[in-house]
Length: 286
Ligand SMILES: *[C@@H]1O[C@H](CO)[C@@H](O)[C@H](O)[C@H]1NC(C)=O
Ligand SMILES: *[C@@H]1O[C@H](CO)[C@@H](O)[C@H](O)[C@H]1NC(C)=O
Ligand SMILES: *[C@@H]1O[C@H](CO)[C@@H](O)[C@H](O)[C@H]1NC(C)=O
Ligand SMILES: *[C@@H]1O[C@H](CO)[C@@H](O)[C@H](O)[C@H]1NC(C)=O
Image 1 (cartoon, protein in one colour):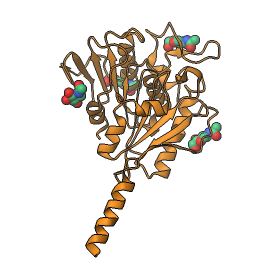
Image 2: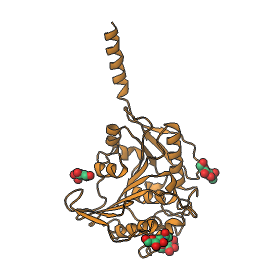
Image 3: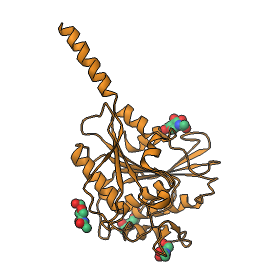
Image 4: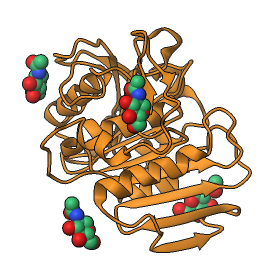
């Protein structure tokens, strides 16, 4: 009987345990920007789980990005038991605001602050590990990842971004979002980051930057510009400390700039570089 009951209970648990879903949650958000928050808590969530914030590209949403079979983070969450948070852009065209003063300032009220509120809520509500909060995204989501690293360095341990632009590279000349700043390259990128959170001198997230050489949407120049930005912020040389050819795969080159910055340049790859779950998880220490 007790064996039967145990079997029954465990089979009930097994069936109810297969129900993890992307779920919209209400989180306390004091930002002006009203960004919807979705969370995926896997069936076998680990205790004090790490968190990966996955930021979608333009013309996407949290739900469609989550369901996109090329976006591997649900899979990673199921395998390793970490929580993923999926913000959904409120803007038409669903790109992120990576250009307004609000979003480019710590506690400035923009999209970045809304996402920071999601991180705080996830730590609090799901007992997540504040020391293991990671951010990733592709294209507009990669730009936003750079913005998050610049505006909320105290909340984020590491970033892995695919095919973006440096933080502060887009400008808002007419009150709109996501317009190209033509004077981007050659800018004082390090100070652009520092000025987004004046006076901050605590730890900053490790940055992993992916870009394809054949990107016709966001120029491959953005790769080197983003490297310039973060090497300046970390005060390390723009000359790599090590270069690994054909890693993590053929025609990709991994370039380390000390322990905090890693560039991965994908020769022949367009926009945007497909996410490599293994390599990003390695960078996050997951
Ligand atoms: C919003 O909440 C954050 C985190 O609690 C706080 O640091 C910030 O000052 C608040 N901002 C506003 C505008 O209320
Ligand atoms: C564009 O970027 C440059 C270089 O960082 C910066 O000096 C300039 O203020 C930006 N332009 C606008 C309109 O924000
Ligand atoms: C940057 O590093 C150099 C040498 O590595 C050092 O001399 C300099 O003081 C550092 N600057 C800052 C602002 O930390
Ligand atoms: C992803 O990176 C890992 C190393 O971190 C590598 O072994 C693997 O082949 C890469 N995956 C793809 C699809 O290239």
